Structure formats: C-alpha cells, structure tokens
Image 1 (cartoon, rainbow, N blue to C red):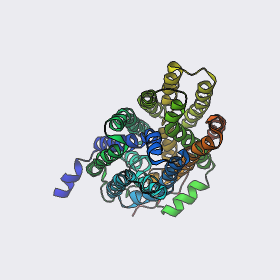
Image 2: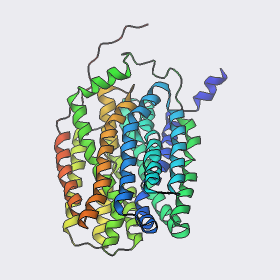
Image 3: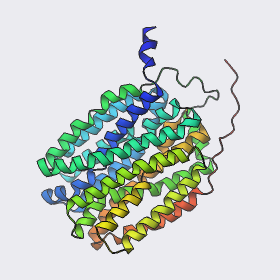
Image 4: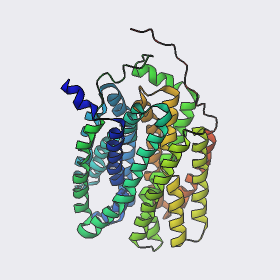
Length: 406
C-alpha cells in the first residue's frame, strides 16, 4: 500500500513540470554551443570546420541513438533513461572543456553529449507526457513542454554569454556541466508506474510497430519533412553568431538575437500545441516550413541592421521548435502512445541528419568560399520542399484488430 501512495504524487501535472524543466536545461545549454565557436577556435587555432564537425556529429549521434533511448523508455520506463542520459551529458560538457586534440573534442562534444541529449530531449520526455494526457489534452501538453525547452534557450543563452565573458570558455563549460546534473533529480518525477501500458488493447512488439510506421505514407512524409527542420535550426543556431560577427556586429547582438528566438519560440510552440487540437496538424507544419523560407529570404535580401536582425529573430522564433508539437501529435494520433517515444525518435533521427548537414555544411562551405550564402539558399529551398511534403499527410488513426480481453 505504501508503494501506491509513493507513486500517486507523480500526477500528469508533475510529469509535465519535471519534463518541462528537463527540456529547459538540456536544450538551454545545447542552444548556447554556437557562442563557443569563435573563442574556442581562436584559442585552439582550429578552423570553423573542426568545431562545426563536432557539433554535426553531436546531432547525428543524438538522432541515431534517440530511437533506442525511446524504445528503452517505452519498454522499461523513462526514469533511468533520463537520469543516465543527464550524467552522460554532464560528462561530455566537462570533457569538452579540456580538448587535447580535435578527435577528443569530437568525442566529447559530439559523441558523449549526443548520447546524453537522446535521453533528455523531446522523444523520451514527450513520450511520457503523451502517455499521461488524454487525446483531447495531449497536443496542448506537448506544446507546453516544447515551450519549456524554448524558455531554456531564452534564459540560458545570456547566462552562457555571461559565463564566457567572466570566466572564459573553459570555466563556462564546467559550470554548464554542473547545471546539467540538475536533470538527474528531476528524472524522478518522470518515473512511470509498472504496467502503465497494460491498458493498450492492441498488443504489438516494437519491431511490428516500427514496420507499421515505415509502411505508412504519411509517417514517411512527416519524417522526411522533419529533416528540413533540423537543417535550418542547427545551421542558424551554430553559425548565426559567427555570421553576424563577420559583418561587424558585437557578440551581444547574436546573444540577444538567439535569446529572442527562444523567447518567441515559447509563443510559437504553445500556439501550435493549442492549434493542434483544433485544426489539421499537417496544415500547421506546412505553414511553418513555408513561413521559414520567407523569413530567411527576407533576412538575406534586406539591408542588414539591428532592426532586421532582431526582426528575423522574432519571426524565426515563432517558427523555431513549433514543429515539435504537431509532429509528435501526428505520430501519437496515427499510431497511439504505446511506442510514441520510439517512433518519435525515428522521426527525430531524420531531423538530426538534417542537423548534421546544417552544422557541418555551414562550416565546410564557409571555409571553402568565405561566405554562408550558399547554405542560406539551401535553407530556403528546403523550406519550400518541406511545406509541400507535409500537405498530403493522412492524420487518421490506423485501423487495428481489437485484442480479446484476458
């Protein structure tokens, strides 16, 4: 009886609060990595491609491991996955502060942090939240949790810049490693009851669920479209500070711009979560991708000033992670929540392949051409393509035979 009472405090609201705080910390720290590009490459005498490659590997490892982190969380519970991933994240940050060579930097900033992020970000956290809320409240709950991740970007970017200014990149990374460990106790609030999935009438193995999803045309279109989201947001997040510095703007302009992205992303993710319960989610996603293409085109066409930079940040912020609630909402609505973390993780892997290319190509093409122009144009073209891909997605739940009662 005592065990039941201990478990009762983990209400859906507690899971949403703890999950939101985990996303605030994990994404808030991660969105500040672009601020380290110039000081680290200058002190270590590396090209931008070396730094960009490490963050590209981070995004690829994050995406490749997310389905497995989601599968383990779906089958055995999310608490241990979240806690273990938080420890890996903090260890990666600590080792990132002491790079002995480019390969060790790729190992710490790329592999370890990528593995850590797979368990403390959207697929696992929103898998728990998606199971805890009924369908009529699920889209809003997913939007609130995504908004919490956006708040982390808004709050922790100025903090990261303050650390860089005060104690340098080495001390800043060690401090952020300590901040990352705060996610470990928060994981307790995400522990799910044993037998939580017993109420699912249709019994399915993880392999069967994955094969079913990959045979679904709408899921494939959704997954391919999510590639574009990763390309765009990681390219901007990693390279915008350097892009603005190349044009003579001081470092604080980039910090304010990225913080504005995070601030207005709170509005964007909350809004798409709210809209997702009232209109087709595929329409929301198409509007987001078309909107990004327009915003980026205006940014590179208009004369650059503080007004255009901050206007770009506000507009892009409204469209930043606002793709996450409708994307995961479609997965949950079509396939149910039993394997939501795993299937969302597979979709997210596509996002992270795009992230890898956005980070790496930004550094590679800059070193080759001395400009980011080509990558900006690629981002515009991909935005249009993703907007078209999401329009024909079928959001109806798949039909399955009902299992006989035990």
